[in-house]
Image (cartoon, rainbow, N blue to C red; front, side, top):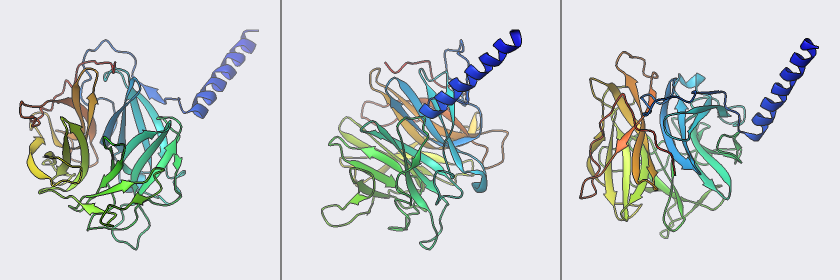
Length: 338
């Protein structure tokens, strides 16, 4: 009888896990609820970079690049938290099995919700010319934890426009509801108006589809947010594999710029970590708290791919300028979304 009960329990557990996987809610690993009051840095274990942080409902989410050699960079994980301290890992929310045209270097995810669906934009294949297959793709799911499936069956952008390599995409939603794709490597940054179903673009009034908005010092990793009626445009400078990777920003009255560089606000601290860059920003509007989510390299690490995801507070001065961020080992205090 004991053996029969044990078998039944095991079967029940397997059926429960299968049901969770089908609904996209399964988490392969999670931190146990801790008694800590701060997140600590890194906020979760493993080599992860280029994190996009966002809030869906009452939950914080982080979507990073799995930081590994390009041939191994063939999937993405996601992480969720109710309070910025306790994080749950959602494994392989998308991979090259579901994106048939991608074969390596899946990176720098950006996600947006529309009509109860979640659209994940990503780069793949690290193309070096217009003759190669790859670029920026879109995947879609019914749940922020996936599983994500190819939305187009091909890249959304597979060519170089204005000299910008089609990587490092970010989706920005303006006040009027218009969504823009801001992207670009190789020291060029473009902005384009996405159409309603994210299958293509709507030309600007002058007929152009891709407008270059590259500010001084730009290398890659664009991000945009609004505060006080102003558009804050942020980007990474330096080489991603080196210690001097950093984040700078500009402010404008329009998402199209012009953007004049203001200052560097995130960089290495020789006593904490190096290579601090490729970031995103989370704004808890209810508490009016701002956080910068970024990757950095531990001091003892020399491998370029040994990057970890961290979070620290971000604040502004009386003139609306972003104050330099102090990177920490402590991270940020526990804070629920609402």
